Image 1 (cartoon, one colour):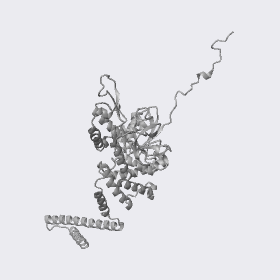
Image 2 (cartoon, helix red, strand yellow):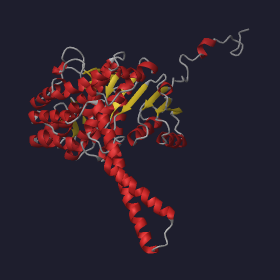
Image 3 (cartoon, one colour):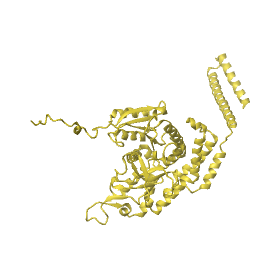
Image 4 (cartoon, rainbow, N blue to C red):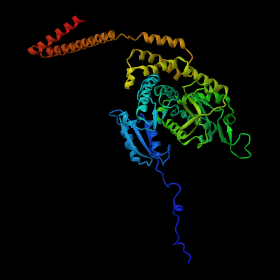
Length: 488
């Protein structure tokens, strides 16, 4: 008798799943510096919401704070109440060994909110000191393959910090250090969309060279062609053909971008900066092929003088990204205006007086013994001399678009500022003691005059009814006044 279906031996291998139904991913540890600011708060919100790594990827947010600061605690409490499913834990500490421990991604935000009332150059020097500290902590405590992303409202500033960080952290691979230059692309797309009366998602492949110059030679917009509207089919049209206004494209458009990026409202609200950082992280970790676009990132230039850029310089290039790695796109065509701006930016970042002074400050930070202990003596003679020279050239580079004008006058100003500072410590100490003694004597004279005036008014009011103790007090005040006059 034949065996029935239920009596036959079942092959268990047929019912084993070839792939596991659910694989739990390893959580990604993300460190955000300056977490008390608005830009960092918006970035942390986007990370916890899952807009960067995906909602199925667990993350652990690390926040480093100074001792006794409350903004980090408020960020932690507010995001914890939102109940996002992406993040698993928060690590808030003032100890770098705890905050940087085994971190996979470091988002270093270079903002100037902490130094109100100071110039851009002072803020740049301060940010370079912070970049030095970040380099020391990342090399000691973070993961070996940690990704470091610099972000901020000024692409020029973070590009300079990128070049300085490369020298501060020689153990970190160049492929793991980037800076977000997508802010210029976000602003460029908004201006182009306003001009074309369309949306920003239809504009692709706007390239940012160096730090702030937009290149639209390869940019396209999905729209109905200007001369072929009868077919009613949307096509990718070059930006130059869609706008057909060279004066606006090569003069008004770049100056509008420069004006918007230098606006103080960009730092006040920080939404555009947050959007640029989120786009940078999405392109880096999710890949550029997913978005069908060629993004731009500030990276360390490779050897071989690609596009005329020397080696080991922070520069913004068009790149292709995949799984956290980037490669520079070669053979990108551009016009004469873009070529001239690339040459000017290379000169400003490598051979100008500003670049030399910045590199002197960087070399001083590397050579100074106190830097090894994460301490920089801001009152040291050589450091202050280089900072004075760097301040003038950074102001010149950031404020004016043509930094080659008035070089002789600026050098004379730096010489006068150096001469006006007395470097003799003993003389300074003597002058300080003399000034303190004079101020004390003047204070005693003023108090003595006031006391004498009060006592005389009381005597005039009371007449003969005056105590002996008050008379003795008046005599003492008068004698003190005469002694101070003798000393003067």
